[in-house]
Length: 97
Image (cartoon, rainbow, N blue to C red; front, side):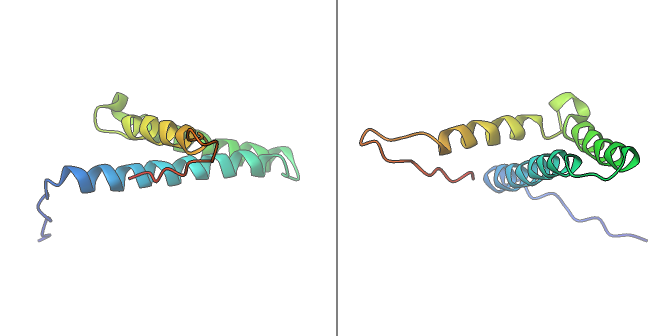
């Protein structure tokens, strides 16, 4: 008999953890794309492409209803803001929750 952990409805914590997970998956996809540039043969390149494709499918699962798409959009917006400048011309560092 398995014991199931009950859900803890903490929206702030959920947003933080889902955004972190989406960011890590996005980083992994970028790393796979970069690794493809240095592959030794076609089979290795195809394998890396397959892994990247699997992560992309995982991210868009459930058409965004229960998947990562809303969180990916938030992470991408925050990444763009990270490179923004404040009124004094200094680079602004934004922390993604």
